[in-house]
Length: 140
Image 1 (cartoon, rainbow, N blue to C red):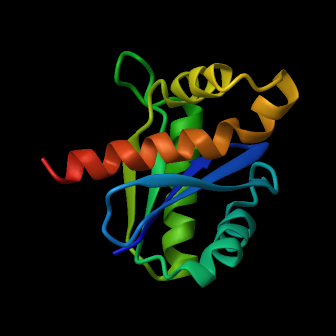
Image 2 (cartoon, one colour):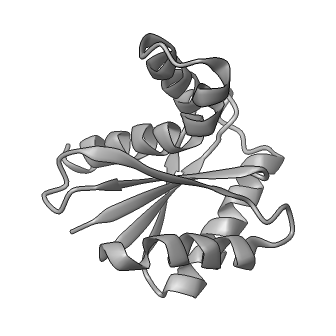
């Protein structure tokens, strides 16, 4: 089964997909967000980019605060996940994404990418980190 992860932001949306054996997550794309308040437009954009990949279920990163509470961005991600489920008619899972952007940034720094190239890839690499963590947690 193929899962697609979404690192949802109000500026950029990172996407990652796993192989059919659910072993490895790979960055797929980064798209521009339609801005806050246009959750269905963002969900439709994600669906358009990913429709050809045979995605069975989606995983949306949920940015908990470090104390475990949900802030405004997490609440927005919950609303986006609901919109994505309605647009795709597929199951959507929410998964804790604390520190994934930092992990993604560290990976890109280690790869030696410049600041501009890192920014262009950070969200989709973060989505891959979210998806890999989801796959590992699912198998436990």
